[in-house]
Image 1 (cartoon, rainbow, N blue to C red):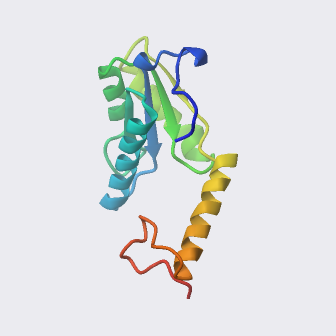
Image 2 (image 1 turned 135 degrees about the horizontal axis):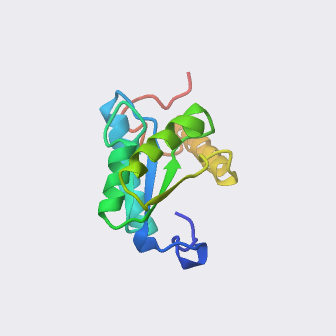
Length: 158
């Protein structure tokens, strides 16, 4: 989390009526989907937004439509969909906006916005550097494994 204040009136939105949907691709691996959902829950709690829902674009539930519906059920009149993707592509350009429009059609008067994906963003480069350092330090025996590699035996030089 950054030191920025939560979305609010200064941004032109009321946090009590603005829902956020963080959508990843979705996976056939249950553990991958659960990781995204846990990440979204942790972000919701740390960021202080009252209406935040996880979604998977395909292959798993909750879908974008289900997450959109859940935001509206909690009082959202605007739903912001954040693609948890590294870069733009067909899903960002076409698929996610189409799925969001289908969901919005069920809720007359509810507006939506599909934001840009995560990268390229300067903070993402800091995250990449941090992850590489952590893994190299672990491989050199200087630090414990990260939360993703813990117990897998994957984080070592070959």
